[in-house]
Length: 295
Image (cartoon, rainbow, N blue to C red):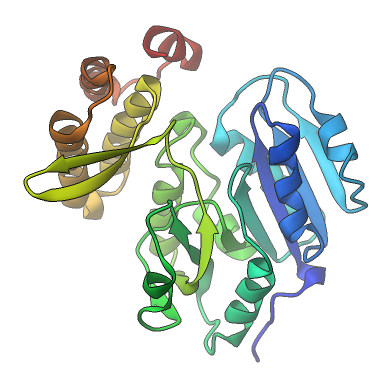
């Protein structure tokens, strides 16, 4: 018998880091469609007042008091979801946006899916600013994926329990893709609802670069983010032998992207941080040391 995702069995896990009042408002897009909203704040400063100003009756705030990374925040949120006996959890970045009534449309798409059997994650199509309506409507309503970005996912708590928590040693970057690899290895499927768009922001800005007769849009990540990206790609390759070739190809693409297309003034610092990440991939790194050195 098909088990629908409803308000009663669905919660939201939202990660915050130095949010603004405008960013806090994003919670309103989905708060009315879930049983609970668990906000986990990685900031050094308590932002409970921002949540209180929303006037939500179903929100719970957890202040960590330091930046322990996205993975740690998500794991805290899922502990709440488990303790409140939720069956599904929506994972949201603080700056991701469901415009208009799209979250309600998302739930409709998910509940219209004919075969829930073995689905561990439902996801959306991410709009980084270069996607138009025609692209959104192209193709079928659903597509099975190997990995998806974390924001906007509907994750079955059973899949989370069986796959295991997000890797906190990753801190940030690639935690979602590595988690997806374990979800797949645990026997679950990942389904993207291709007609649902989530506005998502990558890097400090999007660089528009023309090379070899074509235009590419490249996210301008901070130097320390490039470090984590490379280090965690290699850690994923080590943990999942079946993905090793694809991970090494992705690593090559990351270096190629910076070498050929990055026009930012910190291009060479990024490359140095990425090379350092290759050397550090096999040993633990103190987060604050990396941020201070490469920020």
